[in-house]
Each structure stands twice: as structure tokens, then as C-alpha cells.
Length: 327
Image (cartoon, rainbow, N blue to C red; front, side, top):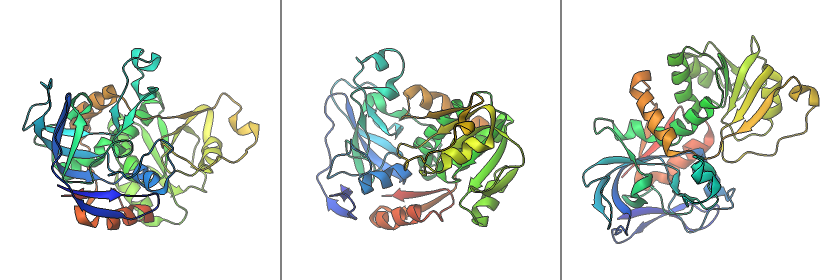
């Protein structure tokens, strides 16, 4: 197998040829068909996540086909197309797991962070944490749904019944969430980097009723603001944009420090929330919505060996949609 390996924090990914992996009990070996590049991969590369181990094969938006199953596995079967998301393991015993909040597990594992991920031709995953996928789905188009889609979906669900939704950072997650909002009848206000007119046009093409820079004031107060850019300065900006009783939901796993801000921005029963990881229930409900909402992902495919170029494109912020690696 071929794997693109991050040997140390900050280093480039290096191609390694390895023996094909063998699944252990409860595991499956998957032939990777596509793996999207996520903002979280950049955090792993940059050493922002304390739980990450090195060397590591990044990648947690994986679409592939099961080639071999380990002892005790009855589902998925060989030949099944599956997705492999960020959440790779939970203990099943802590209070969070037992109460249906496995995303907050005290002893979790994460694909492409604590165990090797999908920037490779093959990977091994726990069978119970794979996601069944429609075999008719296009692998490249589906790959971004495994994190940008799932985390975006969980973030939107935390918005409650909001009718006016602000999206800060119009990248891989927001371009999917915007389509879900449009299907649900919500109104979308898109916030991009100041002066990024191309991204603003992209947002309007996906149904945003207004698009402007993150330094601008929307034409009316928001019910909720969803922040996908990892910039803590956006939190007080979003609080300023939401109405009394509104919510600001931070959808990233890592964010720069939030600056101090006047209490008046929070007063009026506004709330700031964060999203942590995802649950398998999130995946089940989201992939039921995908065909109903007619979600279309915007992607640019790269050969697996060009993983560093794909990462650079994502980091630049100039990529509309998602970069996807194809072995």
C-alpha cells in the first residue's frame, strides 16, 4: 500500500510503501477510493491538537470499499462501500457514551489523528464506526460529507429553529450547510474574508441571500451564527450580529484565542456554544438528508501523491469547496 505520512509536526507528508494492513478483531480493511482534505488535517499537521500522535497518516473524510474483515465482524461485509469519519473509537462505558453523547467520550480515538487515516491506498478501521454508503454515490463528491458535512450538520442542529443563519467562513462545511438551509427554508447570510468577492459570489450561487466580509454588518439581525473559520476574533463579531436570544455556534475543533469583548454583546440571553466531534446518529440522520436536500459538493481532485499540494490549496483559503485525494 501507499501512505502519505506526517512524520513530525510541521513537516511535509512523505510517501511510504508499506505492507497491506490486516484487520484485527472487530476491524475491517478498506481500499480507499477518495479522501477529502479538512481544516482539522491542518491542525494535526501544525500540532494544534494535543491528542494527535506522530508519525501519523492524516485524513478522516474517507470513502472506500471493504476488502477484508477481522474476526467477529458481520457488518459491513466485503465489497460494501463505507465512509470512515473523524470519530474512530469510543470506550462505550463512560457517562457520555452511556447517555448517548459518544462525541464527548472520555477515551475516544480519532481517524487521522490517533490512528492512521485515509491519505493512503488502504486503511484499517473499527467496523462499528464505519458508515454505510449508497454504492451509487460518487466517491469524490461524497468524501467531504464525512466531516465538512457531518460537523456542519451537527452545528446546524445546534442552531435550533433559527430562520436567519449566518455562516462565518464559507468553505467546505459552509457550502454544504448553505444547501441544507435552503432546503429547510432558512435564510442564509454568508461572511467571508474581507474583500473575497469570489467566495461571496460562490455563496450567492448556493442560495445565500446576502454575502459580505466578516467585518461587515448583515442587513438584519441573525437568529444564529455558525462559525467554521478557526479565528477567535469572529466570536465577538458574530455576537454583535445576532439578535437577543440568538446563538453563536463554533463548529471547529480548534480556534485561536477569543479576544475580550464587552458584556453587552453577550447580554440579552445570547449564547456561545461549541461543537465537539460527531456521533454515529449524526451520520445516520445526515445521510438520510443528503439525497432529499439534493446536496452537491464542489471538489477538486488530486492524486494521492500530490497530498502536499492539496493541503497547500486548502490552507490558502482560495479553494472553493474541498480538495479530495484519489489513490
